[in-house]
Length: 448
Image 1 (cartoon, rainbow, N blue to C red):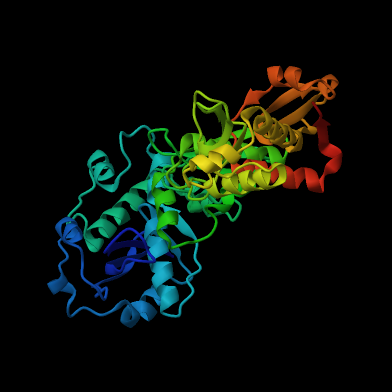
Image 2 (spheres, one colour):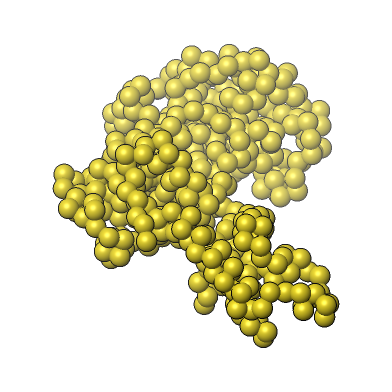
C-alpha cells in the first residue's frame, strides 16, 4: 500500500518548526482506498509569510488538534506502507521527527515523485509540483494547502504508473538503491561515480557554487553517510534542498585529504562549513632599526610587503615567544614593544650601546631560526614511482604535491620547484607536527 502525503509547516526545519496541516491518501497502485486530512495546532504562532503562502492563519488552527492528539492516527496510516511525497525528504523528516516526539518510531520505505518524474517524464523544463501539473495537464486546486497538493501528487503518481514508471519504482525501493535518501536535485549517478579512495569532496548548489567541503578515507561511503540517516536539524534540511552536484579530488592518504580540506575551506569559505572558518588574523615577528641605531623586535599584524621572521595565528602566542627570547638573551622589553613605558634620560644612558645590544638581538634571531624546523613528510603517492611530499619550512607549512621518488633526498630549493605553495594555518601546522611525532620514519629533516 502507498501513502501519498503532503504537509504544511511553520518553517523549514523539522526540529524547530511545527506542522499546521496533514493530508494522506492511501493508494493500492490502482486507486485511492482511503483519505485522511486535518489542520493541526502547532503550539506557537504561524509566521505572517507562511500564512500569506498557505492561507493557514492562527485563527484557523486555534481549535485544531495538536500533533500529539493525531499522532497515533497518522502513525497507523503510515506504518507498514510506502511513504510518497513530492520532495519526500522534507515531508518525511517532519513527520518522523514529530512522531518520535509523540513516542512513535516511523520506519518506512520512501518514494519521491520529483525523482520518479525526472526518470519517467524526461526533458521537462521544471519538476516542481506546479510546473509538472501544467506540463502534464494535472488539475491543481488549493495550491500550498496539504490536501490540494496531496491530491495533485496522487494524480501525478497515477500518471507515472500509466507511463510504465513501475520499473523505476521497483528499482528505487530496493534496499541497495539508497536513492530515496538523496537530496531532491542530486542524481544517483553522481554518487555512483564517486571513488572508494581517500580524498576531498565538494557539495555544489544548482548554480555550481561550493557550499560544503569534506574529507574522507572512502569518498563514496562518506558522502553517502550524509544522506542515509534522518536528521531534523536545519543544516540537514538545507543540504537536502540545495545540493545539486558533487565533485571530488582524490588524495594519496588521509593526511593529504586533511591538509587539502583545510586549505580548501579557507580558500572557498563554503556556507555550510562551520569549523576551521575563523578569520585568519595572523601575526608576525618583525625586526627594524630605530633612529638611535637599536635593533627592535615587535609582534604585529602580518604585512604583505614585509616577510615575518616567524608567524603566529594568535597575538598571545607571538608575545609569549618574544618574552622568552627577551628573558634568554637579556633583551629590553621596552625595545621589544612589550613594556610600553617611555624611557627616561637616565634609563637611556644605562642601556648597552647599540653595537653591543644589537649583537644580543642577532643572537636571539639566530637561535629562533635554528629552532624553527624545516622538514618534509614523504608518503606513497597515487602512482608507483611517485611520492606525496608536504613541506614545512622554518616552522610554517609551505606547500605540497607529488614528486618523483628519486627526489626524496633532494634539497629544499629543488623540492619547492616541484611543489604547489599553499597558505599556512595553525590547524595544518599542528596536524603535521602530530603526524611526524607519530610517524617519525616519514619525516625528512633539513638543516641550514
